[in-house]
Amino acid sequence: MLWAVTLRSSRISTERKKFHFYLQENDRGRFIRITEDVNGRYSSIIVPLEAVDEFQQHLDEIMAQAAHGGNGNGSKQNFPKLEGRALSRPIRQCGHDGA
Image (tube, rainbow, N blue to C red; front, top):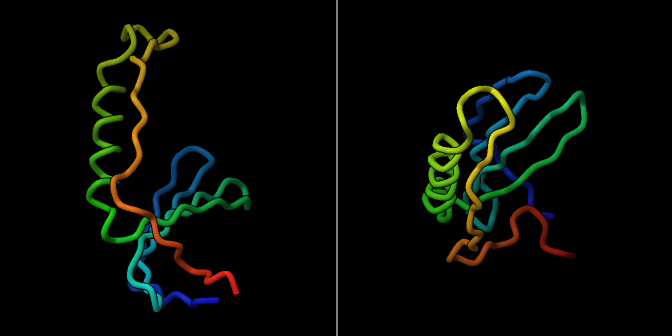
């Protein structure tokens, strides 16, 4: 197993969820780990540093479409259908070498 060193971290809280953001580094390089904590249950995603800009672009696109969706009167919003597409860079496995 590859151990990661945390270089920086931050946290936000919303409703009953907490999101932890970690800039980490291991033998394979730097990456961002985003961990969701819901009442002590954790799930994480890892984004290699070289894919962060493209990851942010996808978030920006989704947020822009969400901001323009719905009817604005508080009822169920009808968001436009979002097209899925994969990141163009291959995602490297971070944190575990399979051994």
